[in-house]
Image (cartoon, rainbow, N blue to C red; front, side, top):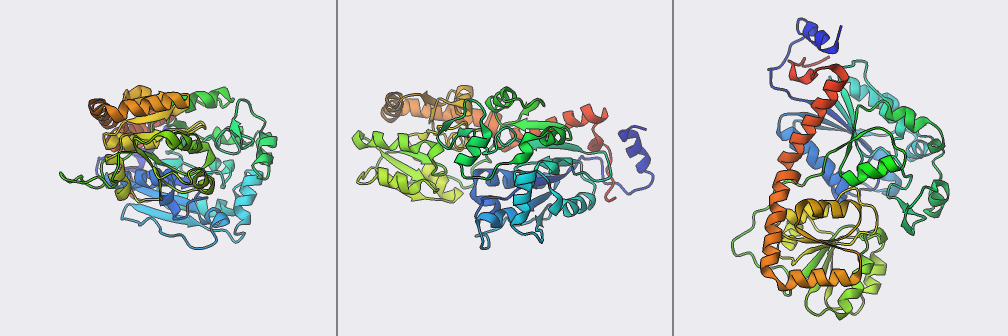
Length: 444
C-alpha cells in the first residue's frame, strides 16, 4: 500500500481538517553563538523570520534548538528570546551533560545526549516536513532521527559550508581562502579540537536520510560539488521581508554628511580592513559601520584619527532601515566565500545600490540584479564609489532595479512560493504524491 493510499485509509479512522494544505514543519537548529538566541546573527534572524512567515500563512512550526550549545559561549541568560505565537512552538533541548553535550556531538558526530528528547518531539504530532538548519553542535547523526510514521520529507538548508568544512567558512588556517582541503591542520590553526568523525563514513551515511538539500546560491551549490559533496542541491535563495517600518515623506538623513555604509559582523573575513585605508584620502563622503565582532578593536585602531569613519555598533532593524535608506551605496567587502549576500537584499529593499567584492555568491547576486558594482582592487572600489557618489540618476536607476529584482526573486512571497514548490517536488519524488495536499489528520 502506498503512502497516499494509507492516508486515504486513515481518513476512516481519524478526524481531518479541511482540504486547505497546512504543513506541520519541525525545524532543527543549533543555537550556538547567538547572544540573544535567534535574533542576533543573520542566520538566526533568517531562521526565525521564516518560522514567523510560515505561521502567518497557517502552517505550524516547531523549533527544536539546543540551549547547551548556546551556553558553551554564553554562560548567562540570553538578552532576549523569540516570542512564541499560536503556530510557532519552541522546544529547548537541555542535557544533564550540559556543555559536554555539544562537545560530544562535535567530536563524535553523535546525538545521543539529546536523541530521546528529539524523538519525543517528532512523535508529539504528525509532521509533514523535518527541516534541518545549522546542526553543527548536534552532530550529523541528528539527520537520521525520525518518528515511526513515514509520510514526511526531510530537507536541509546549507546556511554555511559545514557539510564540507569543519570551520564552516572555507577560510584556510584562519588566514586565506581555502583552495584545497587540509582540514586537520586548519582546525588546529583555529584552535579547535579535530572532528574525528569527519574521517569516517558517518556524514555520508547520515546525509542519505535527507530527501532534498537547499543551497542559497548557485556558487554554494558548485563549491559543494567541487569539494566532493555528491547529493544534489536545489537552489533556494534567502530573502528579507518587506519594510518593517514605513518611510516618512520628509524623513531626514540620520547623518550630516553623505556616506557609504557597511553592515555586518566585524570579523577579519568580512574584509573591512581593506576598505578603511581608502578613507584616509577620501574627503568626499563618510563610512558608517554598523555591527560588532571580535575584530572590532583592530578595525578601530586602524581607523584611529579618521573623522570620516563612524562606528555605530549593533543596530536593531528599524534603526538599520533608516541608515540604509540614506546611504550612497552599501559596501560588501567580504574576502571569504559567502553562502549568500543577505546585506545586498537589505540594501535593495531600500532601493540602495551595492558595491561588492567580486567573489562567489556576492558577485552572483549583483550579476542577477544589475543593481551595483563589483570590484577586485582598491582602485576599482574607489571608481565605483565615485560613480555612485557623483551620479544621482545612476544611484536612482540602480536602486530601482535592485528593488524590482528584490520583489521578483528575494521577497518573502517569492521565497515561500519556491520553498513550498520544492517541498512538493521532494514529496512527489519520494511518494509519488504530495501527502499534505490530501486531508490531514489532526493528531496521531
